[in-house]
Amino acid sequence: QVQLVESGGGLVQAGGSLRLSCAASGIRFSMYTMGWYRQAPGKQRELVADITSGGSTNYADSVKGRFTISRDNAKLTAYLQMNSLKPEDTAVYYCNAEYVVLRVDYWGKGTLVTVSS
Image (cartoon, rainbow, N blue to C red; front, side, top):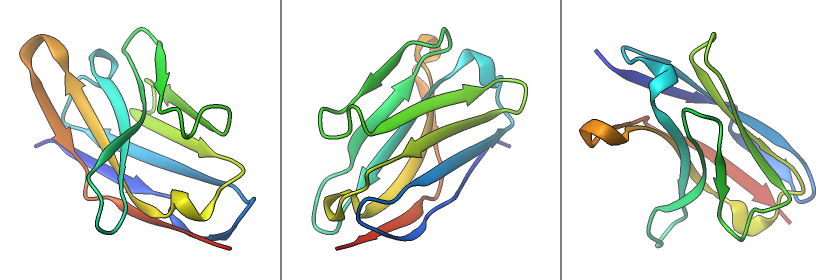
């Protein structure tokens, strides 16, 4: 059974930092592209950042220079370090694991990040 469990969300003031974690089980973690998505109230879910099995990263323009995605294959965990947070970063953040070759992906249940001004 595949599980992706996010943690690390919470309430933070603008300018602060949070680190999100996504612990995976039931998949060959090292073979998956890991992504972080977010969905703000009334908006569509959007890609924040992803990291391929080879370690290549991709970021949304809105978070470049502020957020860093990483992965630890030994711990089956992906991370999103978020610095210089802004109120517009407020959203539910979801972890995604995608195995491109087989076109399968899995989602976590999300963790809420609230940035106060």
